[in-house]
Length: 65
Figure 1 (tube, rainbow, N blue to C red):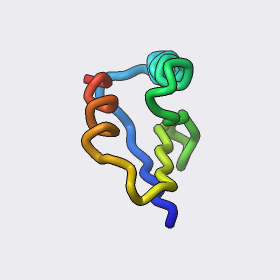
Figure 2: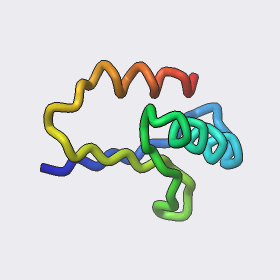
Figure 3: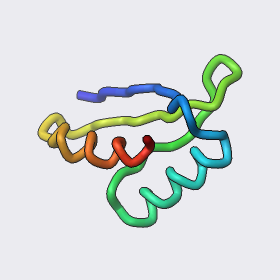
Figure 4: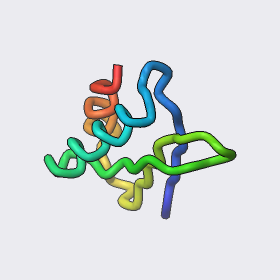
């Protein structure tokens, strides 16, 4: 089962989004890639494993604020 979530942080520039995503990727915490959707840069978060702990995902996403 695949879940795909697109979202745009309110207070992040495009460059800030790219930097944040790269930091998370390099640390191994989360793979959440910037992408274009309807002409706007957004994050694309794909969850493949249905046993992924949502609290772990949320704790990383909270670093966006």
